[in-house]
Image (cartoon, rainbow, N blue to C red; front, side):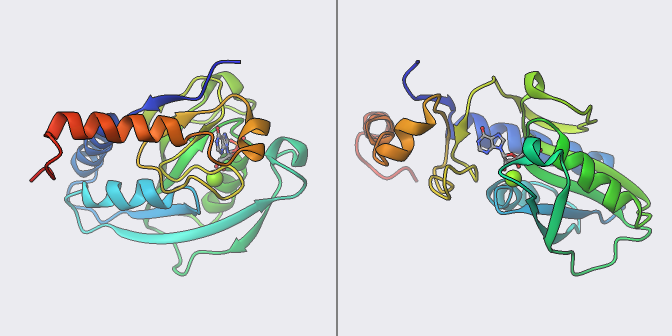
Length: 205
Ligand code: IMP
Ligand code: MG
């Protein structure tokens, strides 16, 4: 089992998110899209993404939960825990997701949103685990192709932890992560050391 490894660095993520923001601003010029964000994983991505979109975008949030242990076990049928505050009828909607895995959750969600008759409906996902796809999903704005590994950081969690890591780490042994919550500490320490080296210990200005 490979050791935990940094999959996407802070710099890689920031630069890719800026690209996505520019692409959205270009495609939606003159319009005011609503970024429908899935709680909780996608909020970190949203915070960076919507500051990179030079348009009067709006945000709204939705929280869903799978019946059963995960989306595969539930066949993708999800329960809405928190619905949108605003009606999306005739709006340009972009669904913001952290990761599309089997595609079951997003497919269910898109069907639900489509029924509300938005003017347009697209998906922006930071990570795309294509190898695990069960239902096809058209992802108009995609950050990175993600290998078939369990990832945490930048919004993605393992048992609600690690969402606040500014980078994305692959952890193949999830049991090890449960048993030892400090498993990633050496990786993060190494990254901090590298930062000190780069900046000579000074805070970058
Ligand atoms: P899907 O219905 O299988 O596409 O499920 C997507 C959801 O599963 C995401 O929104 C995440 O909450 C979760 N998920 C899938 N892969 C990972 C991972 O590698 N790390 C953390 N969460 C994941
Ligand atoms: Mg999620």
